[in-house]
Image (cartoon, rainbow, N blue to C red; front, side, top):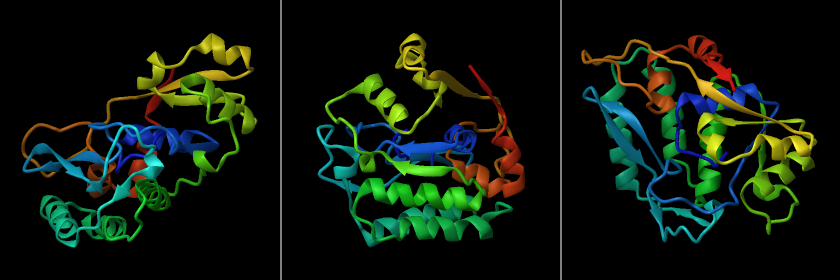
Length: 228
């Protein structure tokens, strides 16, 4: 999976469900995707937060994109998260993690996001081995599904799992020909109390879930999925 900025719970369900999770950092950056942004709850509504970047291009790999370390912007971002969640029951536990991620000095976006992924895994006691795609010796001439299959072979995988959105990208018979079982993880409906008096706002960043739920409760949510 590409690295994302505090992604939704399905991403963490996937990490927790597998033996090895590969951060796919050596594929092209996708504009207006979820690599550098996500939604949090602000005044009862979904609002985008972003990692600020420089010289962004879809012709660059994710690990070639750089983060812009704008102290004023970072402070505003932290203030937005603070104001939105200061009354949440687990704010005091989670906000220091958010500060560590946003205040880090890493220049490369991929490494910046890798750090955030590892920090959340640590907080949620997810112990899956995390591997960086660009550190695997492989043929970078391969594209799409063929590249995924080669990574699976190099890691001696007999099963590959992706989130449900990947169904349109991969062919089960092609994986089976290589001795690999293809599975897709579908997150079930997950709800929890939010501070908003409005109706529940779903599909937000994992930050929202972490602010309103204990790590123990989130660990039970990590199993709320089905495999297809």
